[in-house]
Each structure stands twice: as C-alpha cells, then as structure tokens.
Amino acid sequence: MSVPPCIALIAHDQKKDDMAEFARQHQAALSRFRLVATGTTGGRVQEACPGLQVTRLKSGPLGGDQQIGAMIATGEVNMLIFFIDPLSAMPHDVDVKALTRLATLYDIPMALNRATAAKFIDFQ
Ligand SMILES: O=C(CO)COP(=O)(O)O
Image (tube, rainbow, N blue to C red):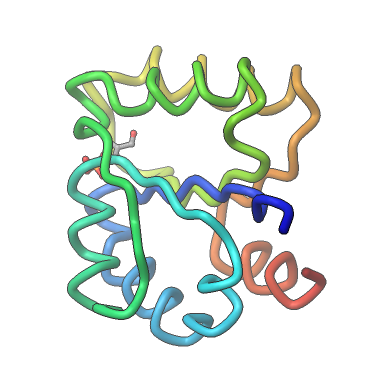
C-alpha cells in the first residue's frame, strides 16, 4: 500500500480557532493524509479532533516553521495549509517568509487562508 501524502498544518495565534474549526469540519478528508503541524497548532487540532493523528513539531517561533520548510525541501511534506495572521507582527517573520518561499520554490499546493484550504481539501 502506498504512503498517503503529507499535509502540514500551521496557524498563527489569531487563526487557531479557525484551524480547529476547519479540522473539525474536514476531519474525514484530513484523516486520509499524514498530518504534521507546528507545536501549538498540532495541539489545538488534536484537541478538536482526537481521532486525527498529528505529528507535532516545534512551535513556530522556536523553529517549527523551519522544520516544515526542511521537510518540503526533502519531499516529506506535499501540501501546506497555513492560516496566516496578516494583522500582527511576528518575531519569527523571517521564518514564515522562508517557509512560504520554499513551498513556492518546490511548487507544492499552499493554502494561506481558510477559503482556499476548504477548496483545496474538497478537490483531494
Ligand atoms: O508561529 C507559527 C507559524 O509561524 C505557528 O506555531 P505554533 O503552532 O506553535 O503556534
């Protein structure tokens, strides 16, 4: 049996409720993928959907975004769902930029808001 593709889930603090709700709403679709997430986001998703298996990496500001960027570069992450907060300054803004740059460079599907992510998951 082939290994299912891997989706990385990330949400900034102001978007974590959205991510938890998104995961609840699309739990069945998400369960068909391997899931990785930055630390806090992964915790919120697991709390919202105890049935989903989520590999939690470091928290974003502590290197989690970079870990996911590295996994994109090595082909271990195939899609990115990243609910970005466009209204708050981030201490790790350079990491966020590096991650979206790598997702663009490696041409993986990347959803940066809930509307896109919903379309995206519906197409899978
Ligand atoms: O900061 C983040 C993405 O840039 C998300 O990290 P957490 O999921 O650990 O909050």
